[in-house]
Length: 308
Image 1 (cartoon, helix red, strand yellow):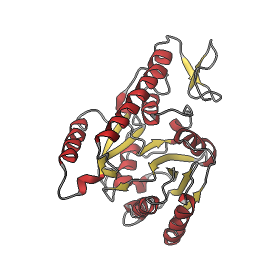
Image 2 (cartoon, one colour):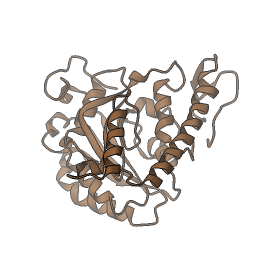
Image 3 (cartoon, one colour):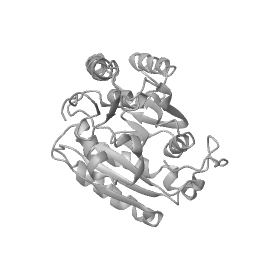
């Protein structure tokens, strides 16, 4: 990742992105039947300070916004294209391009693989990955996440603070207050990757293939990042949270939906533990990248993985 290690000064965290060498930043938005929300999400994205009052700190970079509707049965593609077409012209002089690349096959893992390995340019230095149904809470979210990523070579992924959308209400129900309280307790733990929004180095992300059909993609990616694609012992410090960076997502407001969500997380976590720790990390053999596998292979056995 190009970086001027002497760059300090303006901006949160003591960084100056204007001192960085030019690079391509790809904002990837994965969408499944989001025609009702994606317009607001794109408006929120284009309102970020990196495209507005902080642009001078980013003007040496190239930017590309890529929306990837996958398996959509609604007008997600048309709505996204219409909003980007209306919102991008005043940014055209700022080296901001956009594309909407629809896929016939539904599934976040497959859409993620297609974006990273086929659709996005191999020149991409940083991927800003986001869902199509979030709205930013801080106008400097992307700016501060990029700055945190570029100021420390050890850091591979930067996340923001995920906030449940109902916390913006003036009056919460009893269930919403309990849910918000549980979320605050979880924030004391070490940050992990939320698939809703994160910034990741291109040099790392291009080494990863998501197993197609995986139920908890962000947990799998978190393990890949922490272990440098299973080449080393887990190092959670490779994922950090930026200050003054947040987004809102739809919070679950019924017990039935919460239970269903937790069951999905438990099942996905068990699968991730099997893939990441029992199958790979427990092996004493040194691992090396495998372009034809979903993650890595050992030097003395055939590739391990699913959905590859």
